[in-house]
Image (cartoon, rainbow over the protein chains, first blue to last red):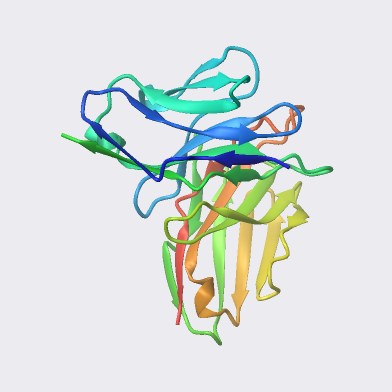
Amino acid sequence: AQSVAQPEDQVNVAEGNPLTVKCTYSVSGNPYLFWYVQYPNRGLQFLLKYITGDNLVKGSYGFEAEFNKSQTSFHLKKPSALVSDSALYFCAVRALRLGSQGNLIFGKGTKLSVKP
Amino acid sequence: DTEVTQTPKHLVMGMTNKKSLKCEQHMGHRAMYWYKQKAKKPPELMFVYSYEKLSINESVPSRFSPECPNSSLLNLHLHALQPEDSALYLCASSQIGAGLYQETQYFGPGTRLLVL
């Protein structure tokens, strides 16, 4: 069965500092991994995904994520945090459903707070 | 354009009411999804439609009735809901490509439902 874990409920970062939001996964077969961001009272916005290829994936708004197969991790990173990055971040893995489009299985979410 | 629209934005209904949530996309996606999200929790899958046919029903109570009248529209009909059904209801869509599980899901802003 596929699953993802986000070990931190909240991450606090000062503006301008680098940020990391952690995600580990458990899958059978090839992992299809995604990061989404959710601002208050809004839907989810797609940031980036890993399917195959280069372990460093670049996404929207300056975010990137590093896929590490040996550590089964897919941490989200940004070199310099902005106050506007403050939001709820979800890591997700694509469920493999025989005969159907796989839905997303989400981690519990990590609240990122960037202080000026 | 990666826009998924949902109406209404907010909905308050009594336990005896019948209402419908609507979702629309014009990206040519042939997979559409309903997720339910409680406050500060990750989204949970309810239904998946592939090529306008219901492909996944996650044992959702019959008071929720999905409908996919065409490739651009997805409805969720609500009847005799309970207060615990109050949540943010998110619609998503994705392409159905050769890489079945690789396609990105794009989410709408959601409908915030309150059942009194």
